[in-house]
Image (cartoon, rainbow, N blue to C red; front, side, top):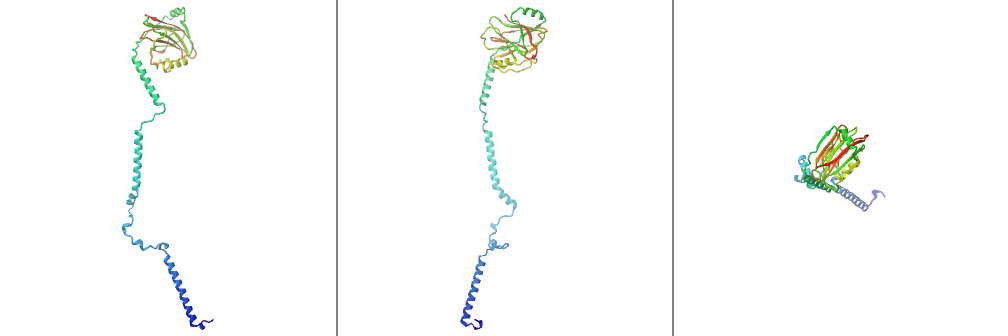
Length: 290
């Protein structure tokens, strides 16, 4: 059908349809434009941001900003410091805990030390012994060869201890001795333990055995060189009269005496524990004197 031959009614219908299509297109474009946001376009700022009052803007002062931001942190640090200080103070004030059994051990030691001090305080002071030497070595040896048990051999590494209890009939103990060829260690001690037997006994033992026995009966002993002399014994009942020293008893007779300080037992020691190879032949005599 040719356009020139359209009737007026058809032309009217076409114009109306064209107008409606254009209206729909315009309406769709408007709806699309209205749905777009300012944030969809970089660099475009909304007018609403400019309308905000200046009071709501944040300060650009970096010092002030740092102070404001560090405030809460400082407060938390102060709280933590106060907690640490309180914990340290609590630890300083808290009593130190002792290891299990440590307190009992310290108490036992303190009690034993106090008891030993009290016992020693009750003991009367010991007088010094009287000692002398004599050149009559041959005469003493000849005399003692005729007496029973007066010539003995103290073997290398051994210690011979003569236990001499005090007796009411006497007032002092005396001793004299000599040796063949070599020297020997000699010392005298006094045990305040009450006397239970009046017999004079001799105990010969190896050095280690003698030390173990004295640790049990007399307390710990110090292993000192015989040449330097021994120290006082650890037993609270044992007193030292003469420390153990090596004596040149092969050159001269060594003799001495000591007044009874009271009831107890003398321990007269002949010490050959320092000798590794040589046995010593000992001539000795221990007796009472009124």
